[in-house]
Length: 99
Image: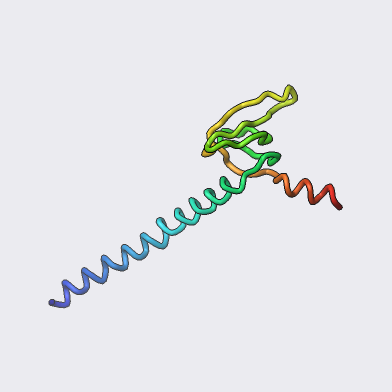
């Protein structure tokens, strides 16, 4: 191999490494964190959906979550993937009540 070929190969490897550490690895971490959050959901948790609604979880069955929202206590079924985040956990509430 001549030095020019070696230089091109090293340059491509550096580019792939930068691409991996700046794009792929952070995305994998975000997906893992989201998966853990979805797996830890339980009835009583207050969540925010990806569409911006604040709701309370009533029931979880497979990939369907039954929510209660608003003053009228409207029940709504959504897909589990539509949960954007947990606002407050049911275990957080029980910890506050014990104190």
